[in-house]
Length: 130
Image (cartoon, rainbow, N blue to C red; front, side, top):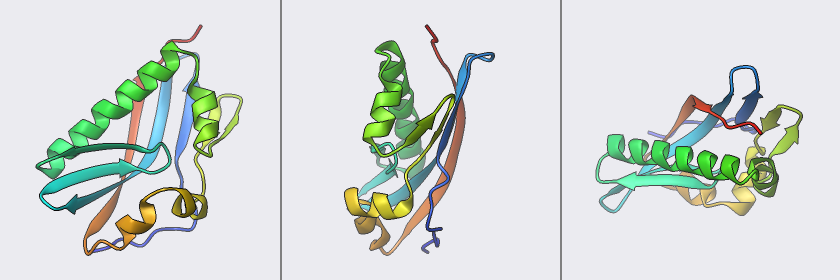
């Protein structure tokens, strides 16, 4: 069963200096290709995969955490978000609209799959602020 999508993505990242966290809210598309489940976030171009949907989602969480950890350690998160089409202003980042993602990611191919579903993933990650 396919879920309809809006014409804008609601992906956001909020930098909270007082809490020392990043509140990340992203769309993740889960689908099966051959015998592998894939959890893919087009706005960050991050994916996780495994033999079950639950394990693929877990692998995605791990990849997301490692991505944020690496970017924060190298002070490159804002630059990388902009490279992925995000709009970064002060302590808030807004993900690219779906039209842009359809042009530059594999999202169009995911929508052609007989079954896919979109889930929202919201998490707070500890951030190292300099």
